[in-house]
Length: 374
Ligand SMILES: O=C(O)CCC(=O)C(=O)O
Image (cartoon, rainbow, N blue to C red; front, side):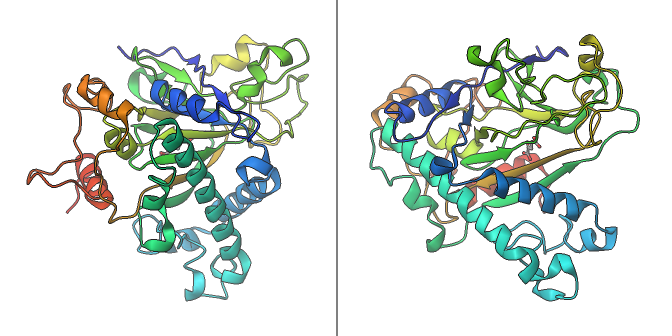
């Protein structure tokens, strides 16, 4: 039963630095249990500095505040949008007088960022292979972008503020900014910003739980020290003050349908959505009024920007069985029948003709099941 109440999801934060000898098993356990996991963002491990992430958010904000004609040129309906590594800006040679279309302006920044995201995904996939006791490059060789095209896509997401944020809750769906869905690929990296909450996951019991913006805020060591609000990621402050933290936020990673199906349901693709968070949140805590700079206001009705890197295997990668005893045993035990499956039947990576799907087949199947694809 899905209800309206939103508790905070207790998603673990994993340290992937070489000093954590248990990183691989911790990562696998979190992916198998929650389908969502935070990666501690130490740039020497993740390769992504706070400045690079902030720059990407600035670029996104700049783009979304640009004139409609410019955005329309790369709308999702256009053939200029959404193919990696050709994003809206990196396809920009068409009109070099347009600052958003000038490759010298932004394309390299975008490509560099995407490459770094991909490197982090490869690192995570290597950890999965280690934990599953298969060849370390079993997944990464099938995600090697030098070998061919893939469904991988990088999206700059913007959920505009609501002048009068809905207060009625999710019952009528009026507070939904992005409807309940799971991701299609292998793994997704999601970057959030302080003061812009709204992401929720559906827990195994069917309830919605808020995904914190700053999960480090709930750690016992930060308690009683003026710690941040885990959901919004903001530092407690007096009315009218703005105090956004500066420490690098952990990077959120979630498992997509393809990796769930490829591992016979061992890794979980968890349904999630984006809402206007409970309006009472600020009021309950005595925080009222518009927050800070209007981007990240405490009552949850403000703008939300996020960056999502949807990582997919190569189009031609065959989704043959993962040669791991743990996966085989999980499949033999029924493969978590209630996972991303429909009507209790787990999705398969085998086609009707008995051949295994390629990653492209799988993506087309998911798109077909979700949208009317002609
Ligand atoms: O913006 C977010 O926080 C979530 C984005 C998301 O779920 C998606 O694009 O699939």
